Structure formats: C-alpha cells, structure tokens
Image 1 (tube, rainbow, N blue to C red):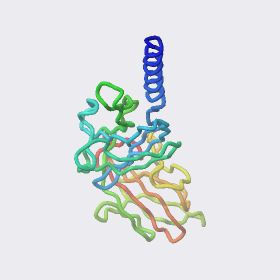
Image 2: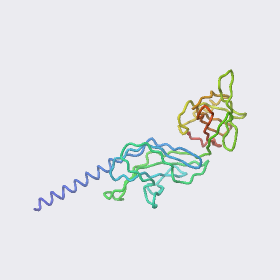
Image 3: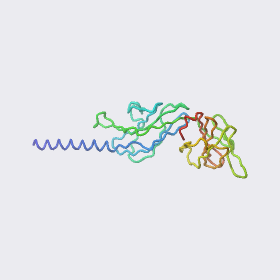
Image 4: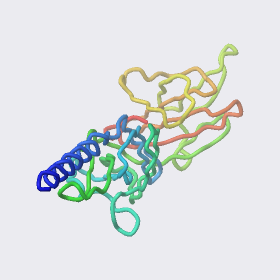
Length: 245
C-alpha cells in the first residue's frame, strides 16, 4: 500500500512539473514591434503567437525613458488589473492596438508590449514574457487635404502640383524642398530619412506617392491618396525627433 501511495505521489509531482514546463515554454514574446504615431495618440503593432492555455492578454508600457520595470510599469487594464488588454486568441495574429495613454504632440516616448498570463504554478502567480524590443515614437499633428495646393499644420503651404512639358510634378514652396519615397498603399508605412542631402526642387507626381517636405528643422509627410489629389499629411517641427513613419 505504501509503495502504491509513493508511486502515485511521484506521478503527480512529475505530471505537475511537466505541466509547468509546458506552460512556460508555450509563451512566445510579441515580435516585429512598431510604433505608429498619430495626432495626440500612439498605436503599437506587432505579431503574436501565444499557445499557452492560461494566456490572458498583453501588457503595454509607455514612458519618456528607455527603461521599464516588469510588470510594475505596465498600464493597468479593466478594473485596474493586468493585463492592459485582454486577448486570448492562440493563433499567429497581426495586432494593432491604440495605447490607452495621454500623449503630448512633440514629446518623445518609448513603448513596448509583452504577453501576460496568470498561473498558480509559479511563485508570483503570473507569467510575462521578457521585453524583447523598446521602440521610440513622437506623436505629431496630422490631417487631410485636397486640391493642387498642399497644405499642412494650420494651413502652412509646402508645395503645389504642377506640370512642366506635360509631365506632372510637385514643386515645393519657397524655403521648402522635397524627397519622393515611392508608391505606398498605407500612410503609416515606415518612412525613414537616410539622406538629408537628397531633398530636391521637384518630384514626380504619383497617385499613391509618398513625399517628405523639408524646411530647416520642419518636416511634412504627404501621401497622395487618389487622382482627385486628396492627400493625408503629418507635420513635425523638430528634425531631431523624426523617427520615421
């Protein structure tokens, strides 16, 4: 009888240990993390592939310094508890979440995301993936416009659609220069300026084209949405805070 009891106890211990290892191994950190700035807001995009049965959702982190303490610095979710965002889908998912936080335009922020779950088998009764990547982002004014005159940020004129020898072009306004970044299908696609000397006095006019105008430290990003010259714009008055997008 004693042997049977000991064998049963050993079986339970081994089973619990296997379950604990399985749960922890199934947590995969979110990856391909990107920050999308907006007007007084920031969204975070990433890819998730959590398989753990006790997965509860995602913790979001925001700060003005490039450092976070887990999970103390995470934004609290519903009822002031973690995770920040409840989510229990266990398949590979492309996620875009607007971060529930008050953002100021022109301020540099650091943001990241982790996967989070509750688990009574671990000491702290929760499990959270390590922070794999912290990204910086600067929210800024943005808006839309239409017509041949391209205006941003309270009506500032940065360029005009024109024609030379029947070839459509965009001419920047006096003091501004322009750089063409090719055809895009989404305004939030990443635009990273790698060559500040590549700004010019004109650029080809392309429906779907993405452009950045520069005047001193001012930068304006413009996306031509359609043939009626409806466009979307964003504006940044500090070149040092331009981080793409």
